[in-house]
Amino acid sequence: MGSYNQSSALEFLELLTELHKLFHGTDGDNYSEMRRVDLKREDSGDAGNLYRISFQCMVYDNSASKQYEDTTVSDISIERGERPIENSSNAFDVDCS
Image (tube, rainbow, N blue to C red; front, side, top):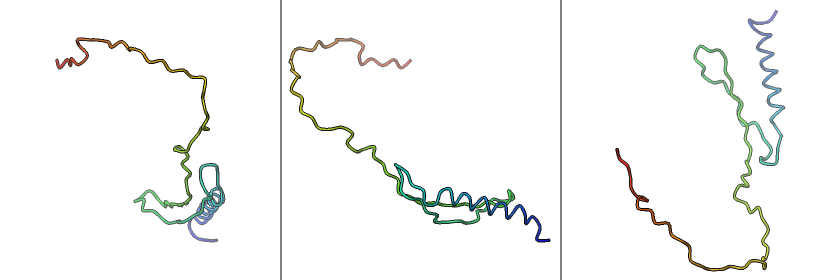
């Protein structure tokens, strides 16, 4: 016979297990192998049961890594000359109205 709401509780636990299987041990180009570090019940007031599953991994941030190769360029010539300066009388005027 079982307890009240037993079938939905078992279904919920099966969903938690599926989530665990989806994330645990996966890795990618930008993160290390994930591992579950916590599963606990959260206070949800009168909203019913709420659980939190926490996974941990290392994230690889390659945004500051060098994305080019050093090369020698010999086909460039540099010419120095006068640059015209634009003279605008209202360059620093501020309208405060």
